[in-house]
Amino acid sequence: MSETNELGFEVGDDFLLDDIEDLPEFVSPPTGAYTVLLPDGIVDKEINDANYFDIKMVIQSVEEIDQKGLDENEVPPKVGDMFNLIFKKDNKFGVGNFKKFAKGIAEHYRLRTVGEVREKAKGVLLLVVVKRAWNKKAQRHNVNVERVQVI
Image (tube, rainbow, N blue to C red; front, side, top):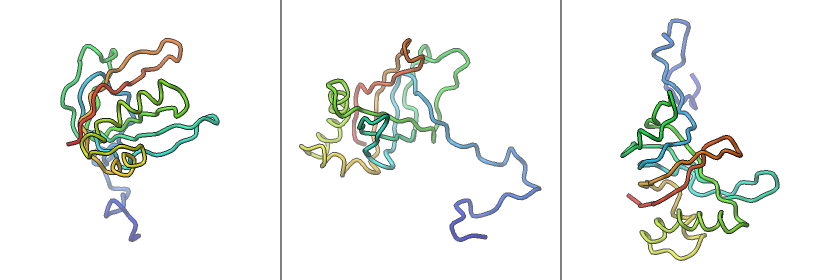
């Protein structure tokens, strides 16, 4: 067995499929409150020649969820599911929404600059309140941050 085997065992022919843990899913969380971990912090990402802040969040617990906001047959997010928030760095909505997100971290640690917030964000545990809305033009949900609090 390889020393880098993260399972600690290898799946063999006699393993039951039901005994193999499901992978976490990437979700568009419905309106609600979630405890999340930022494993990578706030990273730079380029999409179609545009620059963004990219924030991967791993759900640690679902604190509150708006059941009416679930799509038909949608399963609510669960512990381990992930979602990303991206903020475009060169327009007022991207920058303004990034500020709204970063402000909770900055206030908790008494930080003032984007760089300081980015340094503290890696591995931080947050309570985030998000609002999800359907984007007809893009035919997908948009998730917006309403509140961020360091736990």
